[in-house]
Amino acid sequence: MRVIVTGAGGFVGRHTCKALIASGHDVVRLDRALMPAPASESIEGDLCDPAIVTRAFAGGCDAVVRLATVPGGAAELDPLSAWRTNVDTSMLLTEAAARAGTCPKFLFASSIAVFGAPLPPEGVDDDTPLAPRLLYGAHKAMIESWIATLTRRGEIDGLSLRLPGIVARPIAPSGMKSAFMSDIFHALRGGMPFVSPVSAEATMWLMSVDAAAKAFVHALAAAGPLPGDRAVTLPALRVRMDELATEIARQSNARTGLVSYEPDAALETAFGALPPLNASRATDLGFHHDGSTERLVASALATIARTEGQK
Image 1 (cartoon, rainbow, N blue to C red):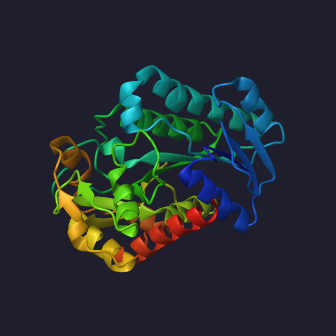
Image 2: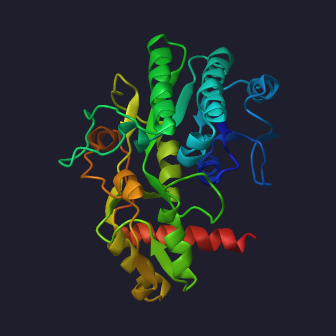
Image 3: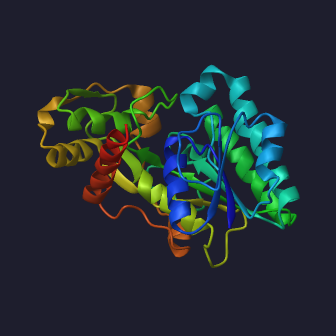
């Protein structure tokens, strides 16, 4: 398939492109800035520029993987810019895909932020209503609905994948309020102290970036009846912060005493009070999480080591 990946220069984007190429797809990478990497074509430019989008789709389109976004904290600080990227550009891309292919697949990186906070303590499943509080979550919910509508109209074959926390992202300004989930990996791996902004008992939904990349590859060929709303919440491991810290320390030969806790009430509510997750819809379609906290941590640490080795 000729797969156009937007946000290809980002953390999830780089790994997804690599996984797609390894699976035999022709990948067109699209982002504002790109590092050299294998691909059928690489296009640098602003997705908000119609000329850039036209260039990307000039060779046709079998599928689109829509990853580029303005995340939670950054969206709250600049709502107009976030709307332009998260909503306007997403609509532009779906329209370009519909024109360039014959009902091409359109995979949208949505987020668990669509559920809002606080979540029902008994758990979240496929019937939990969407009630976003962050602008970022609202934007994701809007585009989920848009993709489902265009799918019903026969213009695209869309599927929105709601991503949990993805680890371990590089240490860099990201605009993500959940950055601490990755920062703890870097700190303990380097033997440095880490102050957690959520309590030791905080519970999070996590997935390694390799597992996320595999999810997008799998979604291109996912069989079985797809949900009417064309959205699935990906399976994720529900991990306590202290358990995560202990496992990272064990695999990094670091002291667990390096971690201290100074909970921030807002962050605890948004990211540290996630109830049990029943992702049976996605599981039935063949999506998987990392399997265990041990495997999640090993994968995340391996990702950090590979990234540092490429510098």
